Image 1: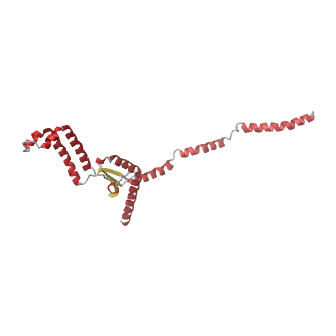
Image 2 (image 1 turned 90 degrees about the horizontal axis):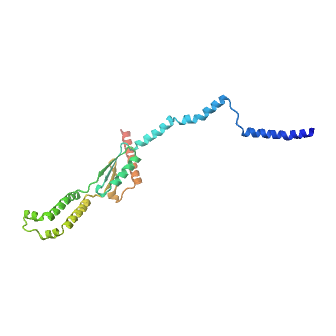
Image 3 (image 1 turned 45 degrees about the vertical axis):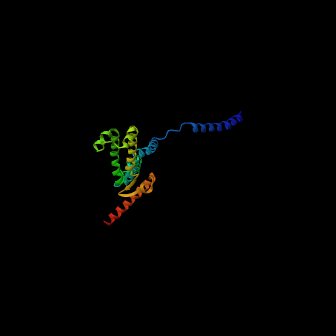
Length: 232
């Protein structure tokens, strides 16, 4: 009987210890002392209290943004393009790109006129159109006032096909006027210095190419201004 109790004790004691370990492992942890809890609470909320206000950490970023935003202030880019060539869309795209890349920069769009002889001829085209259409519609009244008793033979040829003559005169006149008013230009100037010319290159500038050209010119202007200020 004593032997059975000893065996039960030897077997039961390890089982009791093992069960106690399991209970401690999966059971709820004991409550911590009040000071420790307060300290733990302070440690737990400290990052959020530091991150949320961020007055000091946000200020350098805003300041850096302000410095970066000043890169275009005091600089002017002029884009002179051929308005009659439908280059306005390209000019507006380049303007938006430059204003985004160089905040504060002033981009001015303007029409690049053709040479003076072409401009003068383009002014005569509407007059020729009106003259031809007037002769076709009322030539029998116009020629006697000009001193012709009988209209010339070509007048009757034109009048035989009034609609075709008027339509051809209108279309050809508009095409000729557009040609005379077009310059084919897309000229870019930064601070008064030309940085790109479509008339010379025979192509439009790429956005990255134009950004680099303007950036170099701005940097060059700053160096020159700095040297001038140093000399002064």
